[in-house]
Image 1 (cartoon, helix red, strand yellow):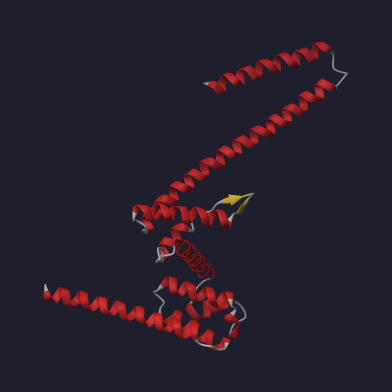
Image 2 (cartoon, rainbow, N blue to C red):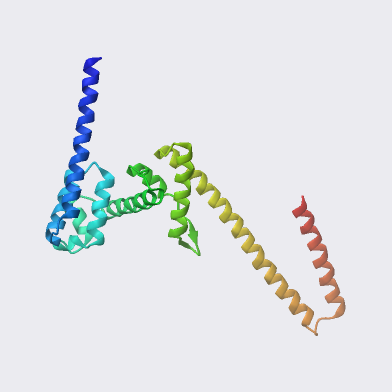
Length: 230
């Protein structure tokens, strides 16, 4: 039992030491009045040293891209991540998006509820569309709403987020399907109204033909209304 306690204590100390080291390195980067060259070197060194601390890596990549620090040595951000870390373009941007969602959620909630990439990866599966494009503001709000619900349940794990996201995506698809049906119906009604209007105003159509069209239209509408009420 003493041996187990000793091992646990040792692991805790190691974890604390790592956290302190990362904190110190972050302060060195943020508090120093350094040139872009030194900022580039500091962030790149940090990423390589803490490669497994994914969200910290994501944050550094975001800074390097936003501040264009990669231009110190490379022409493009894509070349930088490939040569320095063997990252593909898609992986680098995936990490940057993870940092964006983590920062947004943590800032809005006022606490560090998003702590790992797995949580971000699930949140990023949710996308709210408007007029054929992704609505970033609506998407962020929907993501935040899910996190706040899970905070109440005290279960903000990646698996819990994944479940909520799947449910939300299904709801969104159902709503989108209903919206398409409604829009299609409105278009058909508009077309039908246009045809009827043309028939009504066309003086070349005989009265008996006009009456026949009218009676068929009324009969068809009655049938449709009966089907809708079933």
